[in-house]
Image (cartoon, rainbow, N blue to C red; front, side):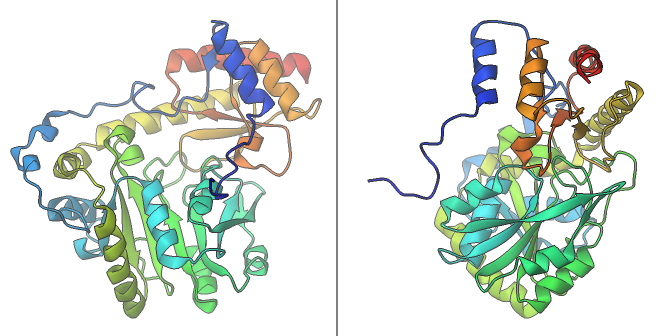
Length: 376
């Protein structure tokens, strides 16, 4: 009696079960996966803006309140007008809107590998197939445009990119070439930029918002990362590209958004205040992430080059399978994310959060280093 959109009966993997058993037994655990800025002690936002009396008035607008969209336009240094910004309740909802806009059941969207394990579920809920394209590493990550083009079929409707990518931390360096490929095949480009402000060792990469690329382009971001407020549930879509395509997409997106009207009025009213006050939080998160990345290098763990974001990818010694490494680290009371969570092609890998609270990170790093040296 249920749909087949998702693998509802998929059993938890061995590592997930082992972590659950470890916690159920009350054993201590140094969690190097914490990526919630509130739990990591980074959030400094005030709740006062939620008390605006205007929030008691219901004035629905499928695009979102004008003041919030004007604040987001200012966030992009006014490179995009408020009229091409559509508010959503989250980046996940933004993806859902775009899949509904672009795809019929059975269509496809190309997504990066490795990357955050969400695309398959978001696509599945819309009866769309997520087809992965490879990211390669050589002193930095890069797109294989030939491989992407080979993956395009008559059912492909869009190419998704994440800049900087999660967890690899690289910016989309060749957006113009990728956009030319999209234009050549009449595809949309969807670029997720939620971590764009968190540059580590390079200047922030250019945004696709307002870049006037030759294909229909949707740039996604939101308060979750930009202001460290995932609980406030506000994301956005910036439309760009050839004017006729933008106009056609805008009218259809308006209909989709008007069907749901999901964005909270108090959060929209508060958005301008939070965006204006974001810089101390961003500076602290960047400083912490940079210090933790340097500590990993100083400990001899050789994280891959990361341009931005909150994560570091560590190649573990190839002395045992990845799941065995995860179990061994768990025995040492250290929690990391395995590479298979992000669909790394090879193994063994470990992914750690660079915004983990400093005391926990230092203790976890010492145990991680001791465990890898002892078992290399």
